[in-house]
Length: 96
Image 1 (cartoon, one colour):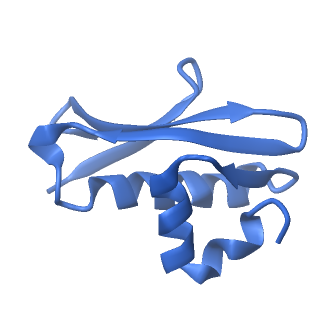
Image 2: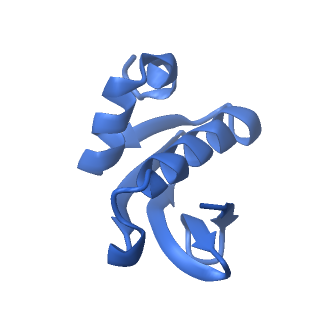
């Protein structure tokens, strides 16, 4: 599986494409102090292969590298659960 991961700022979501086809995305809303992850979706054809995890990791790494002034508010249950399983990202979370 070869994924192309991008930040689609026009649609405010991190995306994964496989062979040029959208495989999944994580939507967000930007505030002045927060980036709120609201929804993650993986297309059925790409399910159970780590696409969602790759998107979340890419998004959080992007926030850390390019938006260090923001804290993450993971309203999306998938993003919240992923961060709980990867405590090295807990410092990004609002209120931590």
